[in-house]
Every structure is written in C-alpha cells, then in structure tokens.
Length: 62
Ligand SMILES: [Zn+2]
Image 1 (cartoon, rainbow, N blue to C red):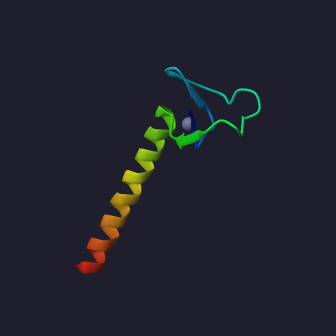
Image 2: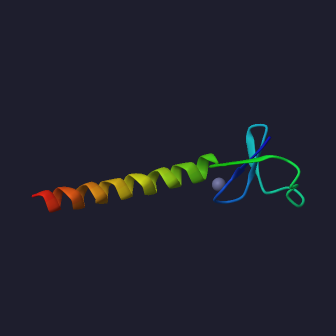
C-alpha cells in the first residue's frame, strides 16, 4: 500500500518521501498521511489553534 502525504502529495518510498511518481495509479491502494515535514507543520498549526481556542474559552469563562 502506498502512503501519500495529503499536503504536498509526495509518496513514501522505503524511508524517503519523493514527488508522486508517474501518474498516480488508481489501482494501487493509497493511504493518506503526512510526511515528516508536513506533519511538523500541521502539528504546529494544531498547537496554535488549541492555544488560541484555550485562550478564547478561558476568556469567555472569566
Ligand atoms: Zn508533505
């Protein structure tokens, strides 16, 4: 099964992330995930959202 980054569309081959090879084969099962780079970006974004949400909810409670 192929793993493709849902952000930058690179696919994992062995332990490397490479640009999508050829035309994506629809026959092949594709699992979507994050490559390490996009994962850390997404993680930062999630933490930022959580932090601002927490700030907003504590402000409304107070
Ligand atoms: Zn990516």
